[in-house]
Picture 1 (tube, one colour):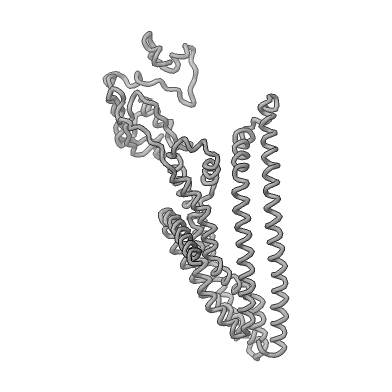
Picture 2 (picture 1 turned 90 degrees about the horizontal axis):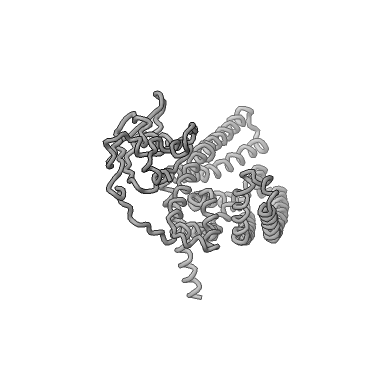
Length: 456
């Protein structure tokens, strides 16, 4: 028994360590996300009992007291203003602020996973399990960076709310907190089984999902399907795509039946609990043990207590479930890296081209390139990669001397530096024209007898 408890403690520490590491990346991506959402959780937790008591007060005043319309209107106005304040605050934080910050977090995650996995050893690509995890990590939206933080926010909200709400309902009758505890335990058990089923479905369908995505991206998205039907290879891939769909459907059907059974059990027990609450509440009202306002509060706010108890009970199991996915991401990103040979900043003969503070813009518009500082060795193959409109073509034209930089300096440290820089390059831009000359002369205008090797 002692070894089992020690093993659980070790596993819990490992899971929390993985979650805190992921939260560390969240703080790098968006430090304000954690602080503002923690404040949002605290405000909501404090406002729950205030709303409940104010709601009870309004109902009891109307039913049991002969109050003026003006007094009732004041309480309704206070209740309405409190609800509107919480709605606006929640909208500003959850809808407005969080949506913007989650875009930043997603971009940070994509940059992190591409930079880390892009340097992994190439031998790992032959491992099917590694490729499945890599596919899952790359296609993920980055929500696991803030998943543990959201669990913490929910825990703070639940602990504060539970203390206040349990005190209110226990004052009505002890049976209500006991019933909420039973329902929360049931929800906890069902949620654990659902999470295990979802993870098993994720691991079972991941290889098929990766295969289906690759086939779809290579052939279907590029409008090759119609042309491929004319060739045997096209028919092969169409059959492969259909087979993958059928296999994935069989896997999903098996797991979906389990999830449907769990959902049905939860809905059936929910209905029984509602009937129980109504029966007990009405019986207590007829016995004058509770007021109409307390009965209305029971019907409208009982689920808050159940949710809070469930969040407290399910915190550590949810952390364990999240840690499984997070651990896969870290294991994929932290594989042994490929070691590349050192590349000299100069070319084979010590030749290079130096960009120093180079900027360029077209006709007084925004800068296409701004403050570029780079050394390019000659005699090597270099790729310039970037999004559309990032300035790749402008950079090449500056390099070839077709454009003069708006600011900065380009220095050619090479044997032919005294000549025109156009003699160093053969350029074929994306908007090129073919002239009535030989192909080699179109690529390299100063083509001569000794330049055949350079063009080839």
